[in-house]
Length: 117
Length: 113
Image (tube, rainbow over all chains, first blue to last red):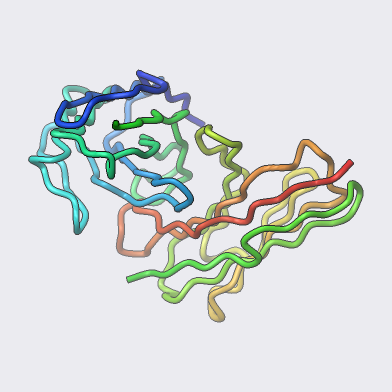
């Protein structure tokens, strides 16, 4: 398994500002994933963050809005830029552990609950 | 695009009854399927992982089955307890997707003491 921590656990932000969310893993992993869970909805993948290369974004998500850093094999940040109330969600990071990293069990952090006023 | 559906969206059962949660997916080219539990306002806890070559997985009171050809998985929770009250999420790992998961909207479960 993998133990994942996220900071902050929650925040309330003003429209137009930016928030950076940190994700720390207790083991080295090549791929880290960022998901969004809007109120009453399921999880949607935002991007895959690989160490040493640019993040790969899913359809509907762009780097200018959600810049990601991946400075080493245990850490990543997601920034939510120029926020609007529609960005109010839970943001979760995840990693795979055990077996072949391309298709193994996924573990999730506790999430960051963001409210934009 | 993989579509994952979970039925029923919500259910309430008396304590001691068995729970049956259903998950269906549209693309059978999957690598694995994972069941998670989510408590209100919290992250996800992994419950069971089933590889595409497997038919079922068991952990304690939990049993998950997989029928890849028909695009279905079922999570059974035996002898439900109030502590089982949570949302259960089904997530499908694409064969081509490098661990990218497609999630259903979840089964919201309330176990009544």
